[in-house]
Image 1 (cartoon, rainbow over the protein chains, first blue to last red):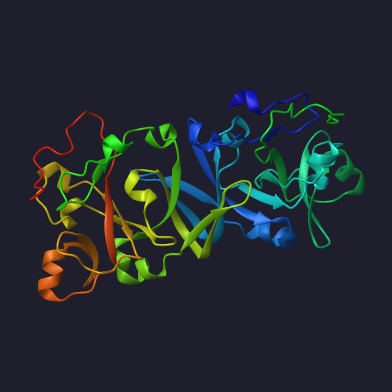
Image 2 (tube, chains in turn cyan, blue):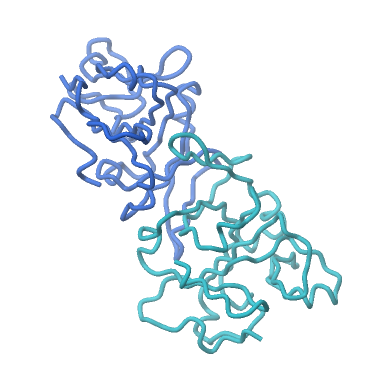
Length: 174
Length: 174
């Protein structure tokens, strides 16, 4: 599904829109712990580190967890540091620090972050703690404000949509 | 993957051997909580009931759990009662109450049971509590002994194997 994860420039983060049945069609899948934006930084910090092993590829988490999501092993997911992956569910896409279509703002998004990469770089996007939850912020802004990151955003997943649309159109990629 | 789950007679339980990459090729997958045979009936009783929902098909368990497995949605898995599915890992296949090849006995097996079906029937196979763990037992034997079942075995999964072999050959299906 490389074609789905469109890296437009180094000043961006890949955004994919899931297609119905896409997990099924994937050539490989990953299982990630899910936390909700409202749970704040604790939800991200306490989400388990996971490994898969044995004959059946059983996933073993370093602690028990209630919410999980299966995603195709898109390129950005394949390079996350061991045990670093967490998916954070946001109720709507207004959390994204770039301009999106009005209807897209109302959709939920799943933001996948790598907790092993907390060092803020100018061109990156990061998951940060906010009063009452979490936000996605540009590295440039975090460097200005000297704010710490919970992890680097490696992928933003939009929900499946019935009609075809060009997911990148009308988005502000800087 | 219907062809893989071979139901030989009503006096049997489907046995499948995973193929490498099979989860990836599956047209649909399921995520099941895993418990280990050594954890005994408590491991089965306490494994969470799960549902998937929302735009991203997030799996929500009714309690936190550490071990999970992704399997193709083989037919027997599609009909398990809601929240009833649990996969139990056995270190070797001697737990199966039918004759198998010597080399197969040394392989680990994953036994998938439906905890919503505890009523023992003559022709079924069941997960039962044993001193030091669990066992798979024929319904006919349980009825004789008046032993309660933890759940009905719906599928036995063998690990992937390098060479091709006819998984059903030399097995005693009664």
